[in-house]
Length: 152
Image 1 (cartoon, one colour):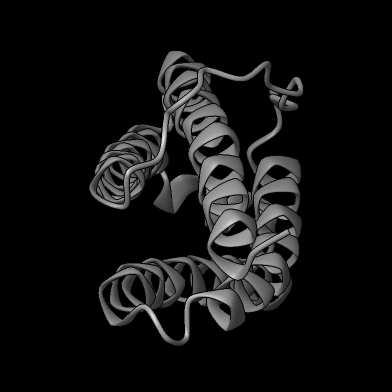
Image 2 (spheres, one colour; image 1 turned 180 degrees about the horizontal axis):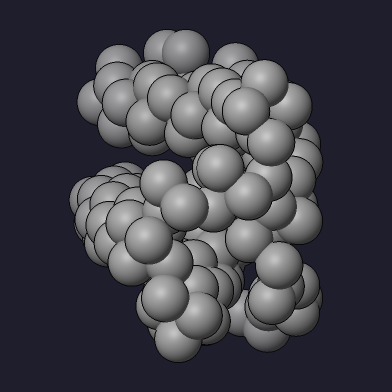
Protein backbone atom coordinates (compact mmCIF):
# COMPACT_ATOMS: atom_id res chain seq x y z
CA UNK A 1 0.00 0.00 0.00
CA UNK A 2 1.39 3.39 -0.93
CA UNK A 3 2.29 5.87 1.79
CA UNK A 4 -0.50 8.21 0.65
CA UNK A 5 -3.08 5.41 0.86
CA UNK A 6 -1.99 4.58 4.40
CA UNK A 7 -2.28 8.24 5.32
CA UNK A 8 -5.74 8.50 3.74
CA UNK A 9 -6.92 5.42 5.64
CA UNK A 10 -5.52 6.85 8.87
CA UNK A 11 -7.20 10.21 8.27
CA UNK A 12 -10.51 8.47 7.63
CA UNK A 13 -10.06 6.55 10.89
CA UNK A 14 -9.62 9.87 12.70
CA UNK A 15 -12.78 11.25 11.09
CA UNK A 16 -14.72 8.15 12.13
CA UNK A 17 -13.42 7.93 15.68
CA UNK A 18 -13.35 11.65 16.38
CA UNK A 19 -16.91 12.17 15.18
CA UNK A 20 -17.91 9.42 17.61
CA UNK A 21 -15.98 11.12 20.41
CA UNK A 22 -17.63 14.45 19.65
CA UNK A 23 -21.06 12.85 19.88
CA UNK A 24 -20.06 11.11 23.11
CA UNK A 25 -18.80 14.32 24.66
CA UNK A 26 -21.97 16.15 23.64
CA UNK A 27 -24.14 13.43 25.21
CA UNK A 28 -22.00 13.29 28.34
CA UNK A 29 -22.37 17.06 28.58
CA UNK A 30 -26.14 16.61 28.72
CA UNK A 31 -25.83 13.95 31.43
CA UNK A 32 -23.63 16.24 33.52
CA UNK A 33 -25.96 19.21 32.97
CA UNK A 34 -28.94 17.13 34.11
CA UNK A 35 -27.13 16.48 37.37
CA UNK A 36 -26.41 20.17 37.90
CA UNK A 37 -22.70 20.14 37.03
CA UNK A 38 -22.95 23.17 34.74
CA UNK A 39 -19.24 23.98 34.54
CA UNK A 40 -18.31 20.42 33.68
CA UNK A 41 -21.18 20.20 31.20
CA UNK A 42 -20.00 23.38 29.48
CA UNK A 43 -16.43 22.04 29.35
CA UNK A 44 -17.53 18.90 27.53
CA UNK A 45 -19.94 20.76 25.21
CA UNK A 46 -17.04 23.01 24.17
CA UNK A 47 -14.83 19.95 23.79
CA UNK A 48 -17.39 18.35 21.48
CA UNK A 49 -17.50 21.49 19.34
CA UNK A 50 -13.69 21.56 19.09
CA UNK A 51 -13.66 17.93 18.03
CA UNK A 52 -16.27 18.56 15.36
CA UNK A 53 -14.03 21.35 14.07
CA UNK A 54 -11.14 18.91 13.71
CA UNK A 55 -13.42 16.37 12.02
CA UNK A 56 -14.26 19.03 9.44
CA UNK A 57 -10.63 20.04 8.93
CA UNK A 58 -9.47 16.47 8.47
CA UNK A 59 -12.44 15.57 6.26
CA UNK A 60 -11.67 18.61 4.10
CA UNK A 61 -8.04 17.52 3.89
CA UNK A 62 -9.05 14.05 2.71
CA UNK A 63 -11.09 15.68 -0.04
CA UNK A 64 -8.25 18.09 -0.89
CA UNK A 65 -5.97 15.09 -1.36
CA UNK A 66 -8.47 13.49 -3.74
CA UNK A 67 -9.77 10.97 -1.27
CA UNK A 68 -13.32 9.82 -0.70
CA UNK A 69 -15.02 10.26 2.65
CA UNK A 70 -17.01 7.48 4.21
CA UNK A 71 -19.38 7.41 7.15
CA UNK A 72 -18.01 4.26 8.72
CA UNK A 73 -19.67 2.38 11.53
CA UNK A 74 -18.50 3.57 14.88
CA UNK A 75 -17.78 1.66 18.06
CA UNK A 76 -20.03 2.53 21.00
CA UNK A 77 -18.48 5.08 23.34
CA UNK A 78 -19.08 4.68 27.06
CA UNK A 79 -21.08 7.32 28.90
CA UNK A 80 -21.07 7.71 32.64
CA UNK A 81 -23.38 9.06 35.34
CA UNK A 82 -20.49 9.65 37.76
CA UNK A 83 -18.46 12.78 36.91
CA UNK A 84 -15.23 11.50 38.47
CA UNK A 85 -15.47 8.19 36.64
CA UNK A 86 -16.18 10.11 33.44
CA UNK A 87 -12.99 12.18 33.82
CA UNK A 88 -11.06 8.90 34.26
CA UNK A 89 -12.64 7.38 31.14
CA UNK A 90 -12.02 10.52 29.11
CA UNK A 91 -8.40 10.70 30.26
CA UNK A 92 -7.83 7.10 29.16
CA UNK A 93 -9.33 7.90 25.75
CA UNK A 94 -7.01 10.91 25.41
CA UNK A 95 -3.90 8.94 26.33
CA UNK A 96 -4.73 6.16 23.88
CA UNK A 97 -5.68 8.66 21.18
CA UNK A 98 -2.44 10.59 21.50
CA UNK A 99 -0.45 7.40 21.10
CA UNK A 100 -2.31 6.52 17.91
CA UNK A 101 -2.09 10.08 16.62
CA UNK A 102 1.72 10.09 16.93
CA UNK A 103 1.87 7.13 14.55
CA UNK A 104 -0.41 8.87 12.05
CA UNK A 105 1.70 12.02 12.23
CA UNK A 106 4.69 9.92 11.11
CA UNK A 107 2.76 9.06 7.94
CA UNK A 108 2.12 12.77 7.30
CA UNK A 109 5.64 14.06 7.90
CA UNK A 110 6.19 14.86 4.21
CA UNK A 111 2.71 16.37 3.77
CA UNK A 112 3.21 19.65 5.62
CA UNK A 113 -0.42 20.79 5.44
CA UNK A 114 -1.77 17.53 6.83
CA UNK A 115 1.00 17.40 9.40
CA UNK A 116 0.12 20.91 10.62
CA UNK A 117 -3.56 19.97 11.01
CA UNK A 118 -2.61 16.85 12.95
CA UNK A 119 -0.09 18.78 15.05
CA UNK A 120 -2.78 21.29 16.05
CA UNK A 121 -5.15 18.46 16.87
CA UNK A 122 -2.41 16.75 18.90
CA UNK A 123 -1.80 19.92 20.92
CA UNK A 124 -5.51 20.22 21.65
CA UNK A 125 -5.77 16.59 22.76
CA UNK A 126 -2.63 16.90 24.85
CA UNK A 127 -4.14 19.92 26.60
CA UNK A 128 -7.27 17.85 27.30
CA UNK A 129 -5.13 15.05 28.70
CA UNK A 130 -3.32 17.45 31.02
CA UNK A 131 -6.67 18.89 32.13
CA UNK A 132 -7.93 15.40 33.01
CA UNK A 133 -4.76 14.61 34.93
CA UNK A 134 -5.02 17.93 36.77
CA UNK A 135 -8.65 17.26 37.73
CA UNK A 136 -7.83 13.83 39.13
CA UNK A 137 -4.94 15.32 41.12
CA UNK A 138 -7.27 18.05 42.39
CA UNK A 139 -9.85 15.45 43.42
CA UNK A 140 -7.13 13.61 45.31
CA UNK A 141 -6.00 16.82 47.03
CA UNK A 142 -9.35 18.39 47.97
CA UNK A 143 -11.71 15.41 47.93
CA UNK A 144 -14.50 14.41 45.60
CA UNK A 145 -17.22 16.45 47.29
CA UNK A 146 -15.20 19.67 47.20
CA UNK A 147 -14.34 19.08 43.55
CA UNK A 148 -17.97 18.38 42.67
CA UNK A 149 -19.04 21.66 44.31
CA UNK A 150 -16.62 23.46 41.99
CA UNK A 151 -18.38 21.89 39.00
CA UNK A 152 -21.82 23.31 39.85
